View 1 (cartoon, helix red, strand yellow):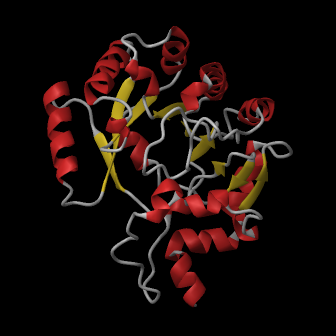
View 2 (tube, rainbow, N blue to C red):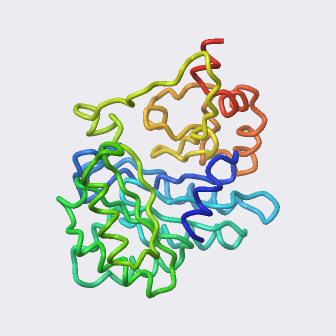
Length: 282
C-alpha cells in the first residue's frame, strides 16, 4: 500500500482506524504532540485491543488500520499480532515510527518481523527527531525496510511552507532514494510538548463558511481504550470525552458497533460536512 492510497482514504468515514498502542517512547522530541517518553505508562489493554481488532469481519472492517503511539514498535509482538488479525479480515495496516531503533547498525529482529507484517511503514523525521536519531541512521534503516518488500514513506514536520529545514530534507530524501519514496508534510501544532512554544494555525476557520472536517472521519483508539470520533489531540486526551465524539470503549464494544455509531450520528455527519466551527456558529 502506497502513501497516496493511504492519504486518499483519509476523508472517507470509517475507512480507517487509528490505534494508539502506547504513549511510551524512548525519544523526547521537543514538538511531540502526545508528550510521550518512557516514564508515561498509558496504553490500552493488549487483550482488549486484540479482541477489538479480532472483531473485524470480511463484510465489516476498516480498509486500513494505522498503528501509532507514542512509539508503537516498543510493542513489536503486539503490533505484529494486530497486523495479522487485521489482514485476516481483509484490512491493511500501516505503522508510524519515530525510528528509535535506527540508532543501532542493525534493526532488531523482533522489530523487523513486526514491520514485515504491515502493508506500509512511515518514518517520522524533522529537525526535532534528528536531535534524537541521526538522519543517516534513519535513511539506512529505511533502505533495509524497503529491501524487505514493505512500502515506505516519510512523515515530515516543519513550521510552514517557508521552513528551510523542509526544503533541505525533501531534497535529501529525493537524492537518497531516487525520488521513489514519498513524504507527507505537516505543520507543528501547539499540542503536547509543543504547546508552550508552537504558534497556532495562522488562519482559523471562518465561522460563516462550511469547511468539511476530515479529522472526524476515522475512529481513534486512545491510550485508555476509549474510542473517539476525532483525532485532534485535545479531544484524544480530554476526559470526560465530549459525548458527541465518544464512540465507546474497546473493552465493551466491537468494530461493528463503533462503525455504526460513527456513521449514523447526525452530529458527526454535520461535522464532517460543514465542520465544527460552522456547526457551532449555526
